[in-house]
Image (cartoon, rainbow, N blue to C red; front, side, top):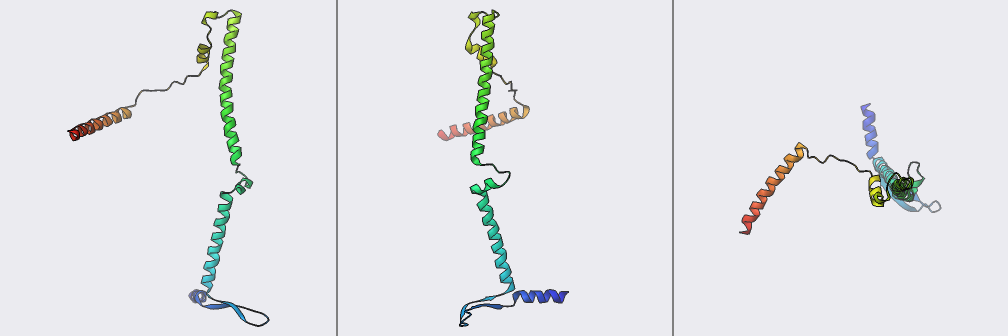
Length: 162
């Protein structure tokens, strides 16, 4: 088995000559000195180059839209615009419903006209999100460290100005 491997290695590096002849005149048109290793390397690099070029063409041109799972950029843009519009329409619809309900209360006599104000009705219809604004212990420690550093740097600046 080792002899076969050695023979194969020798065959890889044996120099051969590729000659292209004119069939009628037997004139030598072109000739190369090659080894099997050179041919293998050239074909391997050519294959890799071909795969890379194909990948880049598909990835960075509109051809990618023909691959299942990829959507067009125009479609994504339209979907985003429609999502924004539907969100704004939903909010304005909620405000209008609250306004109409308040008008119905005024018309049925449940609410006096003097208390009826469009701005206050719209303010009531808006959802207010309550967030916890209390600082955590880590945040308090960080604030103290930053204030110490600022005091030290402020003292250094005052000394430099003198």
